[in-house]
Image 1 (cartoon, one colour):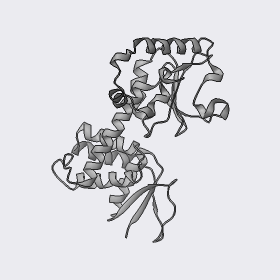
Image 2 (cartoon, helix red, strand yellow):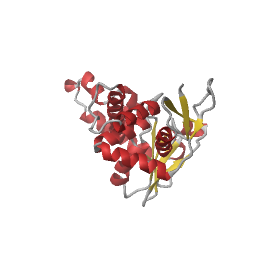
Image 3 (cartoon, one colour):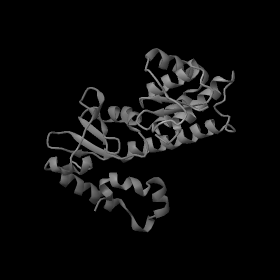
Image 4 (cartoon, helix red, strand yellow):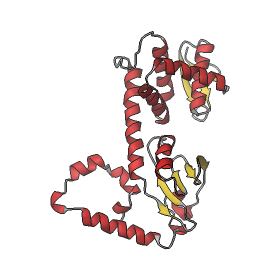
Length: 255
């Protein structure tokens, strides 16, 4: 019988769910967030109690068995938010712990192949967000960027922006998940925000622009236009490096 294991949606919560699968000896289990659970026809589900000792024990076990790149793929796959990813990750962990030698390149196992491919997919979006986020300066000197990524990449891009923009206050807001990263000049924290329709759900900071912001944006568009050489235009290559779905973030692509 399939045992449903419910957790709170956090990565630590997922690690605790893995711990409980082993602790309670659930032979056939699926891990589902409490928010997504819609009931079980064959009995009550098991709800995980978060315990830092349990999550640390599972993670230390994985650190002993996996390379740094494979550990990153586990975390990125979790952040993918793909349907069923938590259960596939459980199967991946079970395969890892069932062998004394490394299985992270055992692509004949569906869970290993899935985690490797999904980790790469999330990694690509992480780096595109690091390259394509454009900030708008508000009247109080805050630099604001809006994103709607397919995956929850904010935790992954935080170190990049904290390091690169350490001399200014900024906020990157994920409109799909309704939370953001805020850097106050000293440290970066996650914040939850709810925008009204006056700012398009957070898509634009134009109602609170610095007066010079529009001039800066026009100057950047003109610069982009001036360095674009029509004779060397390669639309196919351009779309490979800059997929159309990311254009909405780029000042130079607006208007």
